[in-house]
Image 1 (cartoon, rainbow, N blue to C red):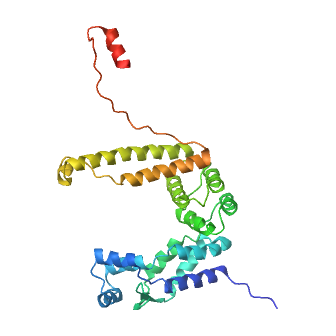
Image 2 (image 1 turned 180 degrees about the vertical axis):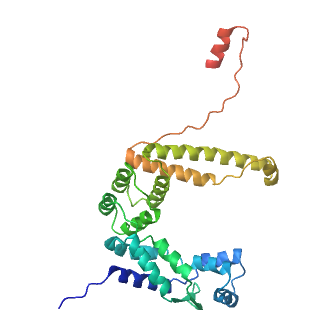
Length: 305
C-alpha cells in the first residue's frame, strides 16, 4: 500500500494554528507592561479589556501576547529548513490562516484561564510574518553551523540567522563560516557575539572589510564611552535640568554596556582574525614649564622633554 504524500504546507499550517491556540499566555513581563502603560491588571478588568474588539490599545496588547517566541521558532526550525518554503507558499498559508477561525485561551502566568478570545486576522498575519518561513540559510553557512556548533545550539543559531535575514554579499558568507568554525560556542558570550555580528552585517555596505567594520564599531563605542563618562562627571556637578538647558545630551547607553560590547568585539576579532585593535586612553599631563622663552632651542627642548 502506498502511503499518501503529506503536503509540507499542511504540516506547517497545523503547527502554526496549534502554536497560536497555545500562545495566549500572559508572562510577568507582559503584566508589568500592562501595569505601566495601561492600568493595574486586575483579572476581571483585564478579561473585559481583552474581550473588547474595537480598542487599538487592546490590539497592541494582543500583538505582544501572541508573539512567536524563541521556543516556538526553535520547534519549527527543522520543518522550515527541510521543506524550504517559498514566498508563494507563504501567501497560500496566509490565506488559509485568515480563512480559519482560531479561538485561543489567554492564561495568567500561573496557568489559570483569564478569557478566551477569537484571534483577529491581523494577529494571524503578523504571527506568520514573524516566523520568516521563506528565508533560506546559505548552504555554506548552514554546513558550517552543522559542523562547528554543538547540536543543542544549532537550532538556536539558525533561528537567529532566520530572524536577521541578512543578504550575504561577497566575503560575508566566508566570515560567517569562519565565525561558526572558529568561535567556541561554550563561551557564555557566544550568542551575544553572534547577535552583534548579525547586527553589523545587516547594515554593512557591499564590499565592506568585516575586520574594519568590527574595529570601526569599536572606535565608535569608545567615543560613546568617553561621552558617557563625561556626562557622569557633569552630572555629579550639576543636576539633569541644568545639563538639559546647557544642551548636554543624555547618553544612549551606560558605560558598562559599552565596555561589554567592546569586549565582545575583541572576542570576535581574536577568535576569527587572531588580532584586535587596541585603543589607548588619551593622556592627561600637566602644563610644562618653559625655562627660557627667549631662546627657541630651549623652548623646543622643554616641550620635547
